[in-house]
Image 1: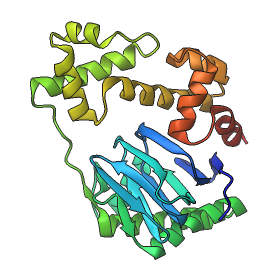
Image 2: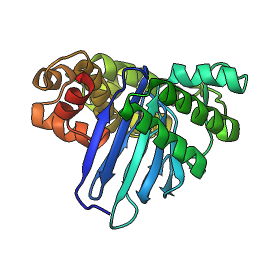
Image 3: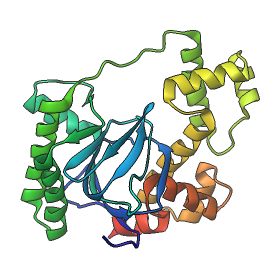
Length: 273
């Protein structure tokens, strides 16, 4: 296996609503983060280890790592030689439309297991990539729908949304809204708690319970999400850094790479191409 790290994060115009990542990582460690999309990651070499909610799980060749939207997780090498994978990131509305057609479920759907041992499904994910690389739109779209239907039938179902019942959970929800609103100049934890009428430690615990990470980690993740949208619209990385609240472009570069897997400049160039 090659030891040099490499990654390509891109889009194929004939697969709207889907991002693609083909990467080999050895020393790479993804910070705890979330995605707005689903994640289907087919491991082709080595082993990926990742924290999914409160568990450390491993994915090896022939297996697929499945991550639902807004689910905190990490990622790092599970063996010294690292791991290679091909990942597709389908948008939520695309998965919901396929679910309505295949398992007659409408609304919020998701997957129950973070790792699925299914070599056939892994080959379908790889096939989506290869078809996109070859410019074969019919094959790419067909294989994407086949693997999604297969995963939904074997490991999918309707998700029950969690309602914030306690006062702490409601405060966490309000804190998230305030942080989104003031992303470029956020308050301290003490000021945020005072504004919500609670204590800093109570807010910290409630936020972690609801979102799986403390407010400052969530804010970094949210900044990178917004940065991606700005980069997609053509905004220069230096302007993006200021817009989302990073102190400078190197600060953006560091956090963006730790979460997305490639630097913001490379991300923008591939998607523009």
